[in-house]
Image 1 (cartoon, rainbow, N blue to C red):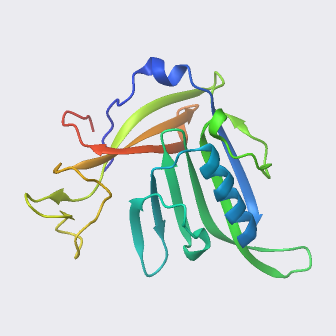
Image 2: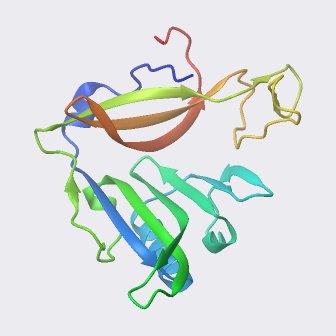
Length: 197
């Protein structure tokens, strides 16, 4: 369930310039270079990385090895970089494994690596930008170091130092012609009651 609630005044999002960039068929070195360039331009605060055996939601680390995960996201107030393992067949019918990646965020924080596809100007008139909060699963029980969700058989750990009972991801969604096309995760914060379904 996604519950939305305004987290940023509309005037704040209207004055910013947003872009979506995409890369495909990256090799391991290309993905490492992209993450390095993005982390230099964007001050990432958090990372969510997963593969078949593990799921990690932690504070961002410059020692992150993105190729160790089949899917990952790093994000902060200025942007989000999301990558995923990809497979394709070339013209000689040889199968390859590599990576595809998407950056969504401020133009000033975009990685300085040429994208494989045309940039999308998310600040143009046909795009609407809305802020929202997405509540995370689990509730923190007083005195416990983790959050608990009855449907998940293990404690949930979030990189949050406070004692808040419920946490949420602050995000921006980019809608065109009534359809949400991109979402940029921005921050982790305490959930504020009063959201609408």
